[in-house]
Length: 100
Image (cartoon, rainbow, N blue to C red; front, side, top):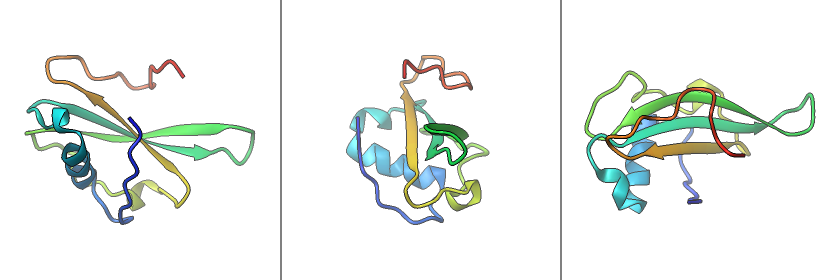
């Protein structure tokens, strides 16, 4: 799913989680896991790089909830990748095991 979210640089991961839940009702289920990463252009070689920045969970407080985009060096033009894992499934391991 591709959703554009225009947000402040001081937005927290918990606030972004709430915005996703507004547009994707399935993510409201308690125990849904959200992994956040910044995707940005690599200035040293062609292509993009991915920097994992944190995770949140619906219905549970976590250590990354108050992390802001600004604190993770998010810049205008970067992409925010959010992996959403339903409850009762193992969240994606670090290393971004994705088919792309």
